[in-house]
Image (cartoon, rainbow, N blue to C red; front, top):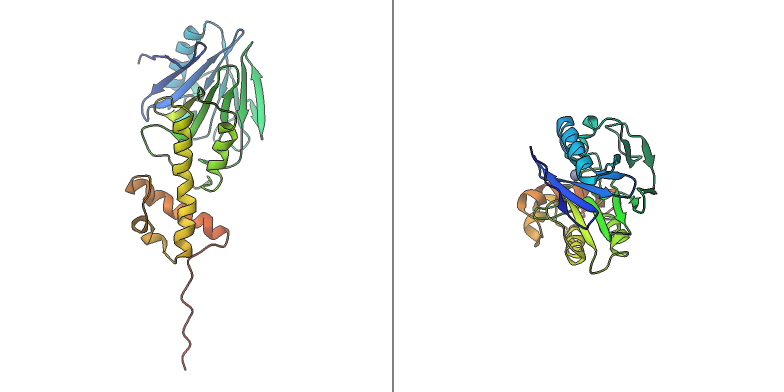
Length: 256
Ligand SMILES: [Zn+2]
């Protein structure tokens, strides 16, 4: 497998590996470099690390995991002694450093900020902001060229707010690296935010109209495919039910 690093800026690169064409980021500082996510398998992780070290020209000392889906963490076991960083809610692999809300790493004239704004795609998503590069690594909070994926640990109501956490710091030149697909700009990130946001708000409206979960896909226009909606609508109904918002039940009719 040849690994091609596509420049995002002069010191930030991305490569996509199969399966799932998952994006792996490489952030280069004066003293050291960091990978963002790891690929699918230990073998792939080892290859990515070797290639990244060659590309960076400085040691790759850190690996940051955006969340625990296997295509993002599967390569870590092949990466040896690097310092691994994840949100404290990430469980399947052991990491060197965990954080709850925010942490920063200085790679030498290259500050990396890791941020957690609550549940969205999962319950432990990390957004990575590079203030010196004007780049955001969004993990699977953003996808390009495919629908977002919804995990029962995530939150449809909070997901747009999580994106707001970095959109507020972004400008028209900010580059967003999604978990899968091509690098996008702020405008595309705003659209993705709106598309995710509509799931929760429109489901709430349908529930208030008495529409049951099984009928919701056909009862409104949705921004995603039928398959995606079949997966996400039960999650939306469950999230709203947990807040006491459910379709009104027919009152039992008592016999005379
Ligand atoms: Zn994911």
